[in-house]
Length: 251
Image (cartoon, rainbow, N blue to C red; front, side):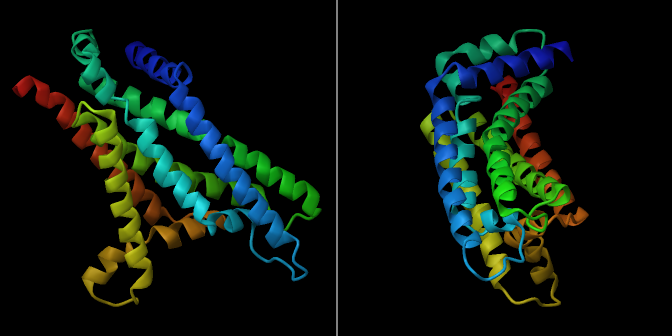
């Protein structure tokens, strides 16, 4: 366990000792600021607003852009950079297991991802303060929204870990991660557009309706089915990443 936490601190520090980490945070702040202006514009309309502030943020395209574009950049260096520089083999000769390496890199990426989203909480609190009412925001809505953000982020970060593990190039890793994330996004879009049917194909595809699932999270409604699905997919791609890391022994 000590080795795991040491590796996690090492990977997390790498984000803040490189320019890439600050560029990611700056881009995230820019997108959140634009969406914040969009939310303020919605709240200034004379018609009463019945939906939570978090739902207003979710319906903007900046949410999905932030999710799809930042996770490949966060994860592209995790394995690819070490393979390119030759430090990966040195790392794997230390007394740490493959599971600890994969888990530490994933944990560090998730911690940085969570820190990137913290300014959103400040934006929501500012809106709540100047809205002067309690109907827009409450703890359950905020908790559900951030749970959805973390679960979707965990899935896309696991995709990025897998992409980074299969190549030595950070650019290729980012492209593979973006392609996989976009495929999941498009699958969710198709699932949300198809009519509800009783066939098993429609029901399976409906499980990937990310838009409806995030819609529920943004309203504070937490369903265990999407939670289990997202956690299972995350663990599956981490398992694939582990198998890729272990494959070096077969060469």
